[in-house]
Image (cartoon, one colour):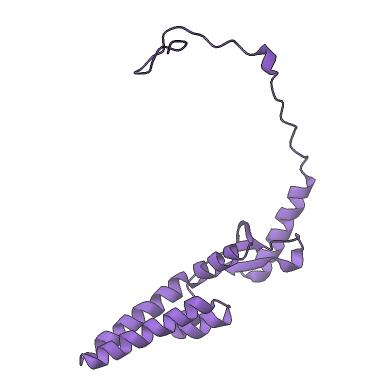
Length: 157
């Protein structure tokens, strides 16, 4: 079973606008990290991943350690593969999207069905009861005796 993070848009609660982000390793994010980031409109992350990978490759070649530059670029790709979906969720939050919750399902279609059923159950529940605020005139008067601890005695300067 896969885990999907359900993100709701900032304005309105239309069921069509909800996004499901699968919380798992992304192979395309690992294989072509900057392109995958750009595809999901993570522009700053895409440019920074490309620049870091290029600098690491050039640095490895200039030092005569081609394998080191490649391995460090592989680490950047691994990071995008493991944390790419988290970066997508963070970008949606910065744009004002709200996290509705998490849904476990075998595929995206099942996740949409489970979300729709949960939303329908939430509509059937009664509204929360109104909070009762106590009357301030019935409150106890403050005591002016000794205070516990290392504080001064109340009522004295």
